[in-house]
Amino acid sequence: MTTAWFNCHAGVAGDMTLAALVDAGADPDAVAGMVAGLGVDGYAMHFERVQRCGVGATLANVVVHDEAGHGDHGAAHGHRPASEIFRLLDAADLPDRVRARARAVFERLAAVEGAVHGIDPADVELHEVGALDSIIDVVGVCAALESLDVTDVRCSSIGLGSGTITTAHGALLHPAPATIALLTGAAAPTHGLPTTLETTTPTGAALMTTLASGFGPIGAGTPTAVGYGAGSADPPGRANVVQVVLGDAATVDATSSDGGVDVTLLEANVDDVTGEVLAHTVTVLLAAGAHDAWLTPIVMKKGRPAHTISVLCDPADAARLHSVLVRESGTLGVRGSTLRKWPRRRTMITVDVDGQPIGVKVADHRIKVEFDDAVRAAQALDVPVREVIERAIAAAAE
Image 1 (cartoon, one colour):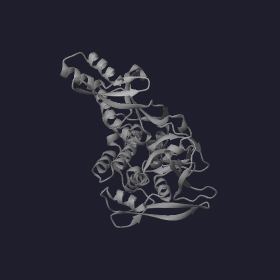
Image 2 (cartoon, one colour):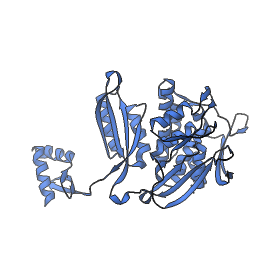
Image 3 (cartoon, one colour):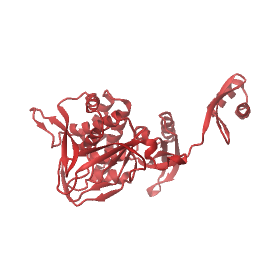
Image 4 (cartoon, helix red, strand yellow):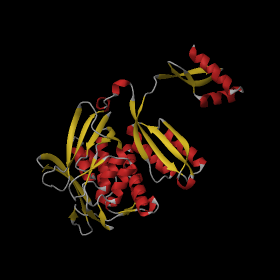
């Protein structure tokens, strides 16, 4: 299991993240091959070595050709509704984890943009982030993570500039509304930089807040590779790079010797979803590989009754299950945090009760019968389910 820790002290953008992963060893041909699975043309992607304040780094260039055939890698190239990007990803020939991660990034972006503009996320027009070069950046990052078999992503504090930036909507405060909304929604730590440059873009913020299972300093352990991704600007006195450090997930964790494991908790508050849909959402999340999923009644603003949907999962599955949670519940936002879990050692066995196989979990302190198996056996034997459970426990104890 490989962990990627991104040092975003100087900020983060999609192309910088992609370049850092390639610099750390991601196969550029494999990345290009996966991006080609989108089935779109009119672009070229290449990587070059550059210097940023004396630091050797890789620069990712995605050149998109306009209708006249001219290349331009500095401007936004059109825009697309979020629904069109989802259709593009769903139809693409991509590895499942690449598709799930990329879709989760754009779902988070659509939810935030929808909240900023007060419209349904499916109807959001993604301008700079919906341009082809940004789509390639996002899919390219997910492809590079796949090339390196990264199962867990972590992130440092993220550097932000100030002033104003020029967007498709006009001059906006910097950080851009979508950028700061993404960082706020994920409770991502930030720090200010003495610059008016857009050090952190919405694409970069969406990648980190979606893919990272936690934020903070690098964990203890032995790094296995390091890479530097350069930004297009080269300001004096500051290395405009994203650093990524790869390591074995088992060694990067400073407290792995205590028997615990890191898990991700995803949560969403919803006040407009029926009980049947909520129950089905939990069922789908569990079937998709969540460790656990549950519902908690809450009261939201103006006294509205609501529920919190909670999902506990491996950090490597966070992006995929985030996508499932959004798709099934229709929530406009998901928050996440990293927790420590101490699972008890157990084994799974099968016992026989009058010819009916029943699964049983056996730990050093208890025996637990799989209830669905017990119900099926009780119906087949026409006896109370509690009797089946008692007999299964007795059989397992032997």
